[in-house]
Length: 264
Image (cartoon, rainbow, N blue to C red; front, side):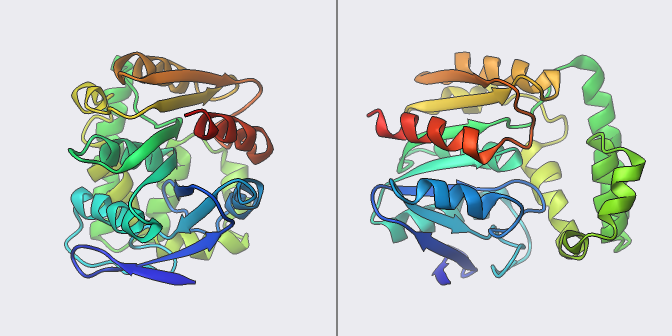
């Protein structure tokens, strides 16, 4: 386990695996570097890249200096890139993809190539009202210190069936997610914003080669968002992965990332 110090003094914890060009993984809501199948993705990529798998601030072993601001998370990525030697590939998943997109749009960004899997922006008109209601209730729950209820509310909003949610309460992951429940405000209220609309002006400022991905079996709006982003980002290509949902198979994802990042 290694650490870097971000611009505001926050300690960001990461692991470094493999050798080759640097590749930073930016995970989504509630995830730390050991969550789910992330270690599997790291293992699949480590033969070709030096993979930096880190805990975003507020999660895992990283610090959580207050008050939170999106620019601080962008500075965290910058600090990691400095640790790699000054330039890195970046892959982001879900709201981590939205954060990676913001980092890539910064003037002077040292992201060499950018890969995004299903940043959860949604331009469907009926979705905007639902998102505003979600943010309002999430804000209430977190203000009351009800982090576990906030996590459950997010899962329900994302479409998780009640039975599956009940099972998750008894899983070893639940306690971990409850501890970082307050970071839902980071990913959703701050990074995705009040409407979670596609940030067209932001995307148009991304100058490096980019890959935008979605799965055929995911939520329909995810594919529409990927298609839109791939047309707005100046040097982007689109890949729709057959049979994949929002929880993409790492065995399917890894060769796609490898092909993209090795094609310079």
